[in-house]
Image (cartoon, rainbow, N blue to C red):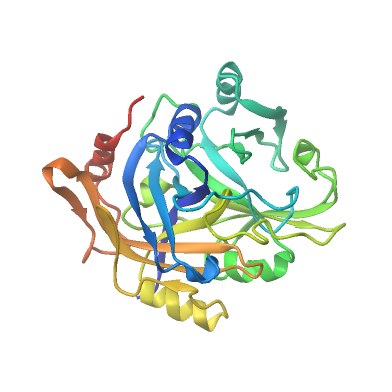
Length: 351
């Protein structure tokens, strides 16, 4: 047996007011499924928080159309700070969340009618697919990308998370993690230059190397819901990139981590250590996120960007009735029955 990566579970988003932000994400992206909501102390994250424990509120929100979720995260005993410099494309860390969309032109029109802050016009990427960027009220950039995967059709303009754009100082070094461990081993394009579709982004008129990575078919309990994803690595070639979280701690404003749903944590730990990226955080046996439970760990990419892994043991279906989804002891490569996954819709938050 070996580790099995089922898909991107979520991207962490640090905000000042999580409930306010979540309401905005429900409106803009249909992230209205509450997988868990919890207030506690992050006791194990000292590697990323300058050695101190931090009180926090967190909620995992998803979209039943498919794709990863948002872990909307708020420090509750300190005021979260924005970056200490003007972040540009290519600075080290998660810069953009890609959102799945089965009809990009329709979503562009809907987002325009909603009055969202769209950056520029519809434009084509190096694959000639239409896409566009928008920015939320909290200065986070999203990219709406074409993706035909639909788990359960919803009324929202988009589905969930389709991947991320990550700034790195050296793409070839970063590939040791993103291809070597995370198994994004299909290179869709590897191009260098000044790119027209980047022009609307901060720093977008500079010269970059960009590599779009995809993966083979994923398996596992939630693989059909999470669906296929992509990672785009971007390296600045005309300057030395800064670190987005320089002089700040994990959980402050912006994209704080990329999280994967996995099976076989012990096998992942051995592989990561052998490849030179040992766990920086390890819950060892089990964590408890209120009504959800499992085993989580972190590694850092070569530039220090946190990557989380979660092996889920238990999820609530209808908490009031004590109805839970127990995942322990299941075949790690077998998808859960659709009827079971679709019970997550009972946790929809309505405005």
